[in-house]
Image (cartoon, rainbow, N blue to C red; front, side, top):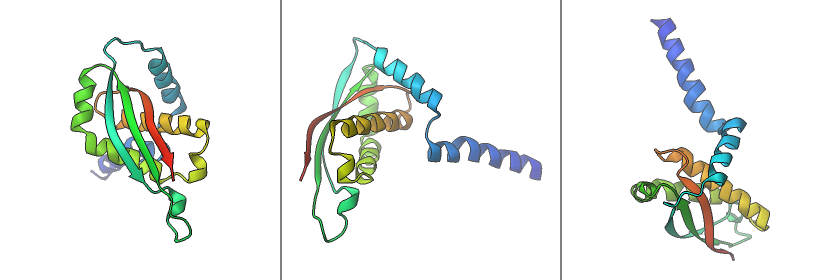
Length: 146
């Protein structure tokens, strides 16, 4: 009985806890990028998530009162994923807020940094949603750091 419990505990830690802490394996990321960038699915639809108004990580002190205003749209395919995003909107918005709130202003200044954040959002949302690889593209329709 103890041996069975040990095996179950090992399985849970190995497959769930470590995967969340470490993120996807490099092979999975490369495979997902290949799928994402080669898709020209005619069913691609765009889902507006609305505006996000947040404080970057380095503005929590009394020194700086800066905020970020970003409006996000997602390119998803197939079209059925549009409804899935709608039903998961609170979880999707929370995941995006966590990503932006962990970044400092210096990590969001350059266009390369913003592309990295878009990829981070796309990977995070694809792990969050039931159907894999439905978020193909992330668009910032507005991006203001004040």
